[in-house]
View 1 (cartoon, protein in one colour):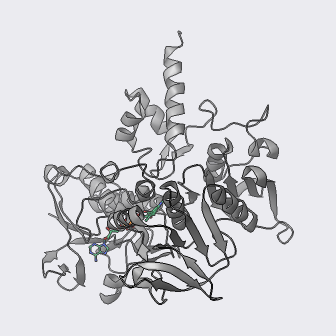
View 2 (cartoon, protein in one colour):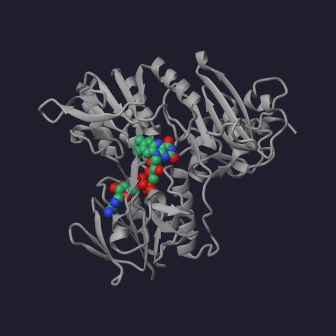
Length: 476
Ligand SMILES: Cc1cc2nc3c(=O)[nH]c(=O)nc-3n(C[C@H](O)[C@H](O)[C@H](O)COP(=O)(O)OP(=O)(O)OC[C@H]3O[C@@H](n4cnc5c(N)ncnc54)[C@H](O)[C@@H]3O)c2cc1C
C-alpha cells in the first residue's frame, strides 16, 4: 500500500489530506505539522484579530477527524530533514517516518526585518502570533504596524477596531503597491485614516526601541523621528519555507520548483501551497494552494492521472471592516505609455471610491474596485473567464445605472461563473447542490466548500440561494 507523508498541516497540507481521503479510504496517510494545534483557516486570522471570530470558529477540522478517517497526524512535529535515499522524513525529536510519496506543504514564514530591536516586534502568521498580539493589545497604549500590504492593513484595521490608536508605516510611496496604482493607494489610505489608522508612507524604519522589559516603546525612522507605540506588529512580507527541500538537494528558486503535476525534480516528492514555485510564480493566496491540493490528490490516488495545474488568476480582496477592496490582474497600466491598453477609471476621493478597469483586445485584464460597489461580482467573473466585454464601459463600472450589465444578478450569471474564488466553486455547482436539496449557505458550504475560504462570497451565495428558492416558489 502506498505510504503518503505530508509535511505541513496548514491550509494546503490539511486540504490535501482531506482530498486524498475523499478519493481513497485506504491509502496510508501521515501528516506532520510544526504547529501543535489542529489546522485552522489562516486567512481568517485577520477576523480573529479584529474580534469578529473566536479561535474555535476558524478551525478547519473537528478534533476527532483524524481518528475517524484513519489518518496519522503528528502535531507539534517539525520535520528537520528529508532522507531521500531511505525515503524517510526525520523530525526534530528524531522520529523517522518512511514514505513512498511525499508532499511538501510547509508554507511561508514571516519576514523579520534586519533592524535593531526587531525581536520585540510581533509577527502575524500563526494563531499563536494572533493570540500574542491580542494579548498585548489588551494592555497597549498605541500600536505601530510595519508594512502596508494586505496583511499589515488588515492588522492595523483590526487593532484600530479594538480601540487602539494605530500608526501604519510603509516603505513604498503608497499602500499595497503591488496590487494598487498610486491613486488607489492614496484613496485607500484616506479611507483607513477615517477609520482611525494613521498612515505614513515612504518611511523606513531603522530600529524598534525597547523599553527595558523586552516590550517596545516605539520605532525610529531613517530621518531620526520616533513614532511611539508599545505594540509593534511586523507585516513585512513572507518567505517560502524551502530549507528542507534545499538541504535534500531538490531544485529550489524562490520556492520549491514544481512542474504542472506539482512534482519536484524528485518524482516521488511534490510541493504545494506557498512553498511551491510553479511556472515562475510563488503564490501568496489560498486559492492556488487548494487548487494544487486537488491536482495532487487526483494524481497520487490515480483518480485522474491527467490532472494538471496550469497556474491561477488571482483576485485579492481585503477583509477589513468598512473597507471594500478587490484588485485583480494588471493594475499598474498607464494608457499614455501603453497604446494597446484601454483604461477606464473613476475616482471620487471624498467618498473613498476608486474604480479602474484595464482592457486589452476587448477583454478585462485588470481591475481595482475600492469603496462599496455592486460591480465586484460582475468584474471578477469577466476577469476570470477572460471573455469579451460588453461595449458599455460605464455600465461595467456602474452596474446600478439603468440598462447596465449586471452579470452578478443570479439570472444572468452563467453557470461557469466562479462564485467562490478560494474554493473554485461555480454557480453551476451551487445550483446542482441546491437541486440535490441544499437550501442554505451552511448546506452549500458542506457540499461544495463555497464560503469557507476568505468568506467574502457569502452574500453572493446567499443571493443565489434566495433566487433559486424563489424560483421554486413560483407556481408553474
Ligand atoms: C493574517 C493572514 C491573512 C490572510 N488573508 C488571506 C486572504 O484574505 N486570502 C487569501 O487567499 N490568503 C490569505 N492569506 C494567505 C493564506 O493564509 C496562505 O496563502 C495559505 O495559508 C497558504 O497555505 P500553505 O499551506 O501553503 O501555508 P500555511 O497555511 O502557512 O501552512 C504551512 C504549515 O506548515 C507547517 N510547517 C512548516 N515547516 C514545517 C516543517 N518543517 N515540519 C512540519 N510542519 C511545517 C507550518 O507550521 C504551517 O502550519 C492570509 C494569511 C495570513 C497570515
